[in-house]
Amino acid sequence: MSKTLSRVTIRTEVAQRTRNFIFFGGFGLGNFGNEITLQAILYHLRHLLPDVEIRCICTDAWVTATTHNIIAVPISRTAAKSWRPHNRLARVFRSVFVGMPRELYLWLEALMTLKRTDFLIIPGTGLLTDAYGLRNWGPYGLFKWSLVAKIRGCKVLFVSVGAGPVDSRLGRWLVKSTLALADFRSYRDNETKEYLSSIGAAAASDRVYPDLAFSIADEITPKSAIQGRRRPVVGLGLMLYHGKLSSDKQRQSTYTAYLEELMLFAKWLLERDYDIRLLIGELSDKPVITEFKTLLKDRLEVFDEDRIMDDPVLSVEDLLAQLAETDAVVATRFHNVLLALALNKPVISISFHQKCTSLIQDMGLKEYCQDIRHLNADKLIEQFCQMEKNADTLKQMIREKVAQYREALDEQYKLIFNDLLPAREVLTRKSKEGIVRN
Image 1 (cartoon, rainbow, N blue to C red):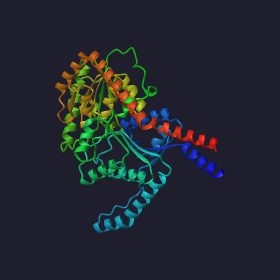
Image 2 (image 1 turned 30 degrees about the vertical axis):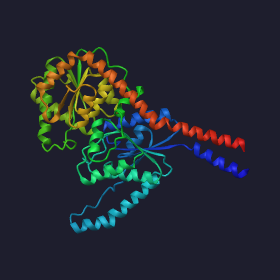
Image 3 (image 1 turned 90 degrees about the vertical axis):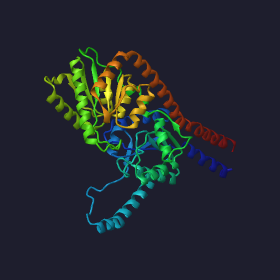
Image 4 (image 1 turned 135 degrees about the vertical axis):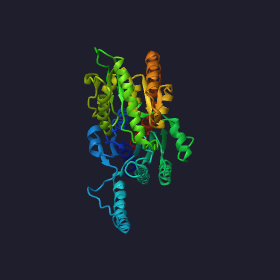
């Protein structure tokens, strides 16, 4: 009798153990799209499973821990001063006697970090790319942590992720190998799935769900814009373009032309009695604000700073508040466009990657998009006039589409989180019944 009772008691303890979730991604970098993605999935996880333990493996652990009130650890620890010899023999020596032992230590550290972890979740963002290198949150870092998770018996979930480009042979192998380890895979658009299928990394059974940022919680969404303005406000989202995600070899000339065409558009807006709010989607975009304002001062006969607003954006909440105060948005960053749509703003997208084009097409707004490499101010003015004319119809269409996206994301959250509850409750109930019978 005591032997049976002891066995049942152990089963009950296992059933009631707090579940441990770890998220992985390029968080803490100052990219507001990444931050709203993590914020959205954390909100829904805490709502559906309030008693779980949450940690995050990320690029900047301190920023992530402070911003999201969770425990965070760095993806990879880097020494403050790293020896980088110029001599080829010295580099080989460093790799063998310094690099390899250090990497082995980092693998062992990862094994310890994932001890007693139930789920490793990669939430959204476009991290399936080697455009920024293989290490850190690139394909190698993702492969390492996913493999360690499987060794530890964790379930690995890719949730509404984006992809591309993956140009290197090693990068493609790492992406394919990592996705093969996953227990669940979903992509934020059909184009991502098709791209991954083209490199042999996606399966027909993989799912497609909208970007997680569409599920932003009401608690962090501004309720309404400030009333009593003298003029309508157009949000102009700028980006420090580097061309990495589009493999643009003419990136500098593209960037120069991009600012020139936007300057002409901004001039037209000011002449038509619109005010402009300059927006960014990442802290690294700050220099482009200064550069753009300098260009405007040089080209405009009269430069009225009061009509060009560029208040600091230091958080997701700041960005949402500024977007809420606009009447329409013309933006480059993917999540500037997405969040404007989530707030039911008419939007024109200046696309620098297929994800931007896919988003605007999926919303039924394909005529309100231009490729950044061929941006034309006259066409932009024409698109804006058309958008303004059809604003009421567009808002209704956007509202309905966003509602569909949120419903689909609720379905996905329940699929990956809520379905865990029945098994847990059944096991606990059966254990209690076993104690009573014995």
